[in-house]
Length: 171
Length: 171
DNA sequence: ACTATACAGAATATATAGAAGATGTATAGT
DNA sequence: ACTATACATCTTCTATATATTCTGTATAGT
Image 1 (tube, protein in one colour):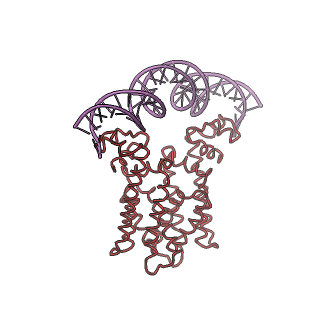
Image 2 (cartoon, chains in turn cyan, yellow, orange, brown):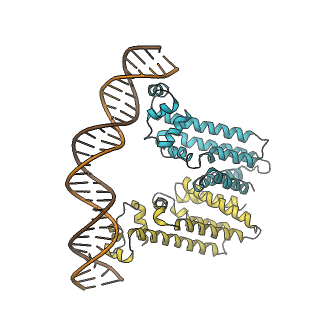
Image 3 (cartoon, protein in one colour):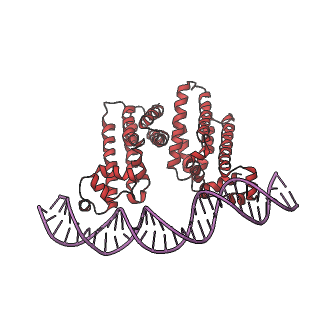
């Protein structure tokens, strides 16, 4: 099913046929319609599941408090955004951004949940208990991530710059 | 001549004719060819001039040291990016970003010059004389600006978030 | 819980030709 | 230092017809 998302990403939503997806998933085309009512629902479910998985992993990373906060944040941003920087992976972000109407409110709620997770981790840190400051730092860190995603050519460049941003924003 | 850029922004480079530009500039179409060798050169010159003007104003703003640094930075980012957020103005950024091949190296050098100006102002500040820290802050501030530009719906929203980012990044 | 095949209806690609529009230049004029 | 008109050449729109592809469903089978 992750293969469906990859296929959508590779060719775009409209230029991807159910035939292609079925072949990539090693099942028949009618079999796809047994699992998903329509192409639109399949697309929605594939994106939603991918986002859910990423959010779960971010939650897991941020919860592992044996690692330092900057480290956890960098790993989280890598999982959430860095993974999708670069020649092949950026198509996944593209196909999501290009079809907001098909996806509904997941495209809004998932980023908000990510922001909440980051905020909680920053707010929980000792010595930085003011919620307002944590909110400002979170907001700016996410904006920086979005900007870096547009600037960076590959995942390594994203991580390099994001590491700097996290360090600077946490003092 | 600024009207040429606005016309390009409104319809896109390819769908804008020399006739339209000439009309907007209140001269004849052959008159345009007297001033500019080709449509491509006109586009290049219009964009270049616009960027130069913005950079000059940024330089002026950052040089006015009677105002506090965060204030000057916010005004600079507004001039450089905030101005181009929103329903009508964002087309200017779009037509520039969509046609990098026509524009040459200006699209690379101008942002670098903006970064240099911001860096100089931050590095010059007392108590923050370490160049590395200033470079990290500058880099992150610009990334945040790019991200906010993508997040914000209008200029006011951009300014609001950018104000927070500057405050957080300068401590 | 599927596969294989088949099919209607809709959307989309392909080809073609003609019309329209655009660029860049030239020329004559003020 | 331009305007107005005109023109060759090229690209882009428009329309139309045909062919292909795609979606969604149905049916029979395992």
